[in-house]
Image (cartoon, rainbow, N blue to C red; front, side, top):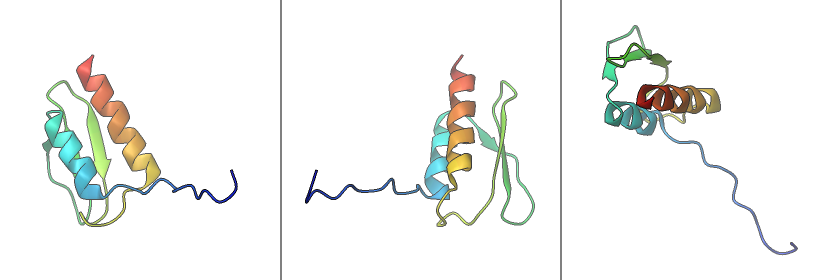
Amino acid sequence: MHGIATIPHMPRKVREVIADLHAAGFVNRGGKGSHRNFEHPRGMRVTLSGKSGADAHHYQEKQARQRIEESKQ
């Protein structure tokens, strides 16, 4: 594949991950500093850190994705 540049995965913003959590029914239970604690009515919890405009870390995206999937079962 000469001459074709591959585009690396661009990290999503923290605000995008938060929007996904809200859409799945998670509620922001507050936090301290830049940390936000989200809880689903079925008991799943996720903590996100960072300013809303910052890039989300891969482990934050993965954890949020896993908890959203768990909440659907």
